[in-house]
Length: 422
Ligand code: PLP
Image 1: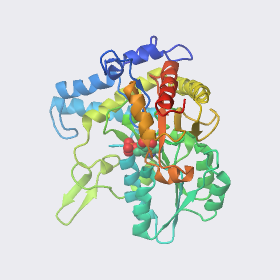
Image 2 (image 1 turned 45 degrees about the vertical axis):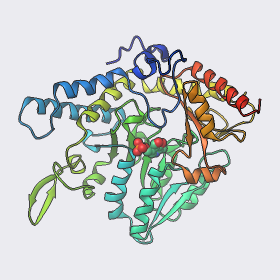
Image 3 (image 1 turned 180 degrees about the vertical axis):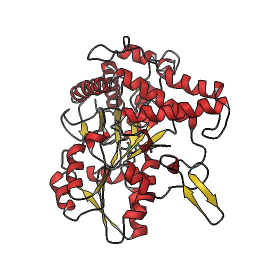
Image 4 (image 1 turned 135 degrees about the vertical axis):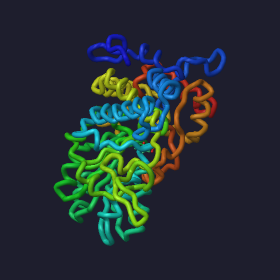
């Protein structure tokens, strides 16, 4: 549990105190090297000691399968697993914890919806609206579904600034799509989409709405009731939680009407040789032995973030985004992709540096203990829109500060020296 007096003031995060909670950030990665500047949280965040200790405690003290054993260890594991579900539900203001299904990640959550809801509700000739900015996780499952069902995918265009073209959304909505699925925050460009407005318009057109919250739930206050969506998918490992933890939230009436995703133990009410009936939600969608420790660890991550306060997390990252904009703007030949202002943008920066290959940029930064991402960020169609195959991406979180940005800018200066452009 985080003490609320040491890691934040009324309005700010105390980054030094937060960094002290993250063992990875406090080790010597290379002898004598400067501290690690971890700028790849959009891929996976680091984990605070409270999450690591929660996992350790589970495996050392009460490791057992859940919902099955009539003995103390199993009862404790079950109780903590279900308590984590309540923590997650409160975190996104879900009307009921039963609407939160533990999965491995955002990808699995979206595949669950495509498989169970999609095969029931999307038929030949139907339209599914996505956007050109989606992560492959919110694209490929729908391609598979469309191919199988004979449905059509339509894509909301992007403006030159890297925002969604809402007039084009309106045009696509006249086709009365069955589903509109979009990411709340772009992992490649950092754009924060107006999820409330997009959802409102999609609902008026009669569509079911799925929001990919992989990059929003870790970084902003997200409230499913004020968003008005039908499904929200997110990954625990991007929000300080363990690898292999994730959540699908869905409206109860939709979840209840959907057939199971996978069949097996735990998800049944009664099994006969001739057929079976299903358990109530969420068990219907949690076939087999779940990742018990990881779900409990995700609960600890949610407690940590809640103690910091998601408003403060958002404000902190907004401040970092502003500073990063100003400092990256000083680097000659550096082009930031996506919105050219901090409003409506997350602390995720994809950029190109002259004609230096992003892998070279990342490798040189790594030699200075600065971890960034290089590649297509699982957004190949978006990269094509940008006219590039890859970018370098720096993404920031609660443990980053101005010094990380200063080090990044200095490192980019060295990249330019090495490549003879400075
Ligand atoms: N959606 C977005 C916007 C993402 O950024 C990511 C991961 O980077 C995903 C989906 C997939 O997340 P996961 O790999 O945890 O399933």
